[in-house]
Image 1 (cartoon, rainbow, N blue to C red):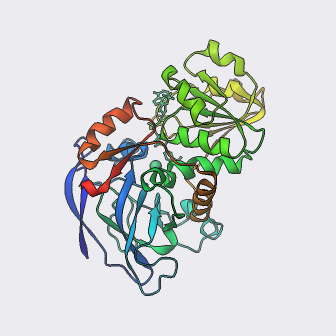
Image 2: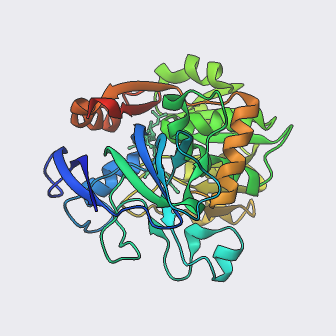
Length: 346
Ligand code: NAP
Ligand code: ZN
């Protein structure tokens, strides 16, 4: 066992504070990564505060992890000391069920092991990337293409794959009309990735002030999502909408923007249920789908795609000591567009 420095919450209502955790020694197939940067995902906040159900404390969030390999087990083939490596939302799965064999480890039938808030194979709790180092089976460690900015690549490991996966699954390509609802961490990645895939992107945002950014990020159009009079001009127009909103919201507005047979994909994970208007779906034969991050192979594919197309997150780098203030700002939508923690400040 080794001791790691971390920031942990001790309860759903306590702030994140300095803490110590233990990590296992790297096994034969494990890689130890000294963490240099970790993105702040809204899921970290939902989980720390037990918004999706009771979390187990102490709780160390963080699943957009980048760092340098500092130890490898004797059977590790993909990594060597000093390599830059990434870890997203998954650290293990059963490797043998149908979804795992299909590269959908996030849907492992025995239960995926998430980077935080799960129970690891040895029965210990998993702790996330707001920490000095992490030990992960090499099958769940991502190769970071050479030359990518570490702080701007970290958010790809959740925000990037969570938007890349449904864009690909629902066929975003040249000419596809893609709407992105909510311009936060996930939303801004959805805009960049959809634009890189050749789609015509429209941002639907509740924040008028984000319009110039939406255009700069790659959107051709911007509509104030809080105003049905404004969204009316999109009626029946969009092929696909990626809904990244983190709180309850009115689905009738995005649904009305979909063409016949169009799809609204929920990736935003509101803790409270959303109501579905039957007449938002039935007359236009529309559908609502869900999507959960992406498998490991697809995450590597996304990283390679982003490297080739020069797609990176827009980040504000913070010291770990400012993490609680960053959570407050995240809740107010006051981040352009992802906080990344410089873990050397730990
Ligand atoms: P974020 O940076 O906080 O962005 C969320 C955006 O939603 C905000 O910027 C805001 O955009 C909009 N929004 C927030 N509150 C709203 C409200 N009350 N009504 C309408 N719009 C609101 O969060 P994120 O990190 O992108 O995460 C977004 C959601 O995705 C979270 O629920 C997170 O847990 C979830 N998530 C899901 C997966 C998955 O696998 N499915 C993976 C990662 C994250 P505007 O200002 O533009 O309106
Ligand atoms: Zn996330």
